Length: 122
Image (cartoon, rainbow, N blue to C red; front, side, top):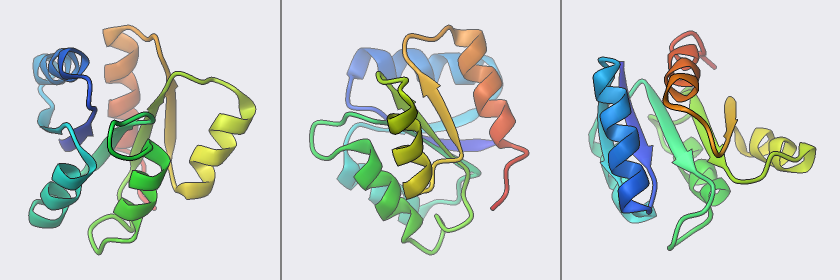
């Protein structure tokens, strides 16, 4: 499984990359919307993982942009969020997120959620 991870927090991004690699997940990381869209355009991924709060754009807008690309139409997307409200989940679903994970979460829970996306196909 090859995933694109988008998070602007360098420390968290490094931790999540390491966690996925230890679980034998091939991961490519981006810290900005622009970098994520460029990587998504040039590479074949099996899933996207997007943080809901990014410096240059909100995660929901990025998800909508990823969904609009030729590679993103059927791609499973996991949104990482600080908000666990029903409204936040509904908004994530409305833009095309398949999975939703509320921070803070443990490494095992994160890997489990990513593995669940292997079964998701739109």
